[in-house]
Amino acid sequence: MSKVGFLGLGAMGSRMAANLLKAGHTVTVWNRSPAAPEALVASGAKKASSPKEAAEGADFVFAIVRDDEASKNVWLDSTDGALAGMHPGAVAIESSTLTPEWIRKLSEHFRAKGISLLDAPVSGSRPQAEAAQLVYLIGGDAKALSAAEPLLKVLGSSILHVGPIGAGSLAKLTTNTLLGVQVDTIAELIGMLQRQGIGPKQIFDAVASTPVWSMVAGRIAASMLSGTFAPQFPIELIEKDFSYTVHTAGGEENAPAITAIRNIFRKAISEGLGELNMTAVVKLFEGHKD
Image 1 (cartoon, rainbow, N blue to C red):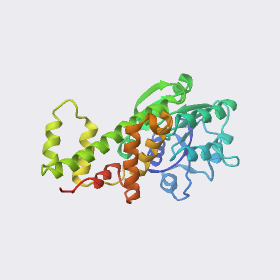
Image 2: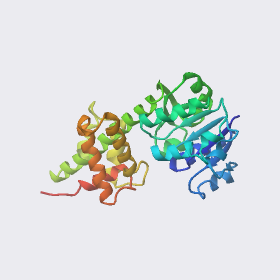
Image 3: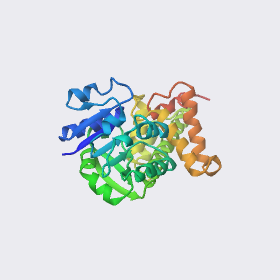
Image 4: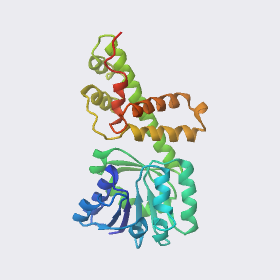
């Protein structure tokens, strides 16, 4: 069994760390909010006062945090950053949704210390994290991936090596952008159907028998039509990912459709929907009559 440091105990990270504990690994956890680790500590985890302390002596260190800035702070903080606590030969596993630009810069810091970094974002939400059914989209060195694979198999059902450092982040942004496009499109179509006086479910059930429908489209539509918006993937986070995609594309002129949908999510945030599930964007369109 391995010694593992785990940084970031939000909705995803807390479930992932719990699965590592259940598998028998020694897990030291850190979170910016000091109360977050308590349930894991009760299950056998050790609590660290800083990312550096969590990383000390660890064979593998995971991080799953909000954005580029949070990633920079947990790994590279001059006083408490995890990189300062890691030893040569250890493997860092960055599972946050980040820009490829940042993950490549981060890898340079690890390389200088003789430590491998895997660009390892995940596809899946809270239920998949809890059930250890995440899909890993891995960028980085094949040797480091081979070393980390036994741990990744504890957390995920599929481990896909998509290329060098940065490729994992590109795959994740591509995945989330395609997801968000479907979310907004279905929301707009629900508004259109309601204005036409037709029940959206009746139409969607018919469309579901055609090749254009997807499994995720069914889940999106069901959430919108039932008004179930408990956060699995909040609007404020998918807006962040859309902004990263626009940046990575080279600006709004290179991604006009993606920018337009990003702005719809921004509007939803401005109307107080940011903490709700991404499907709550339907509230911008539903119920209007000509």
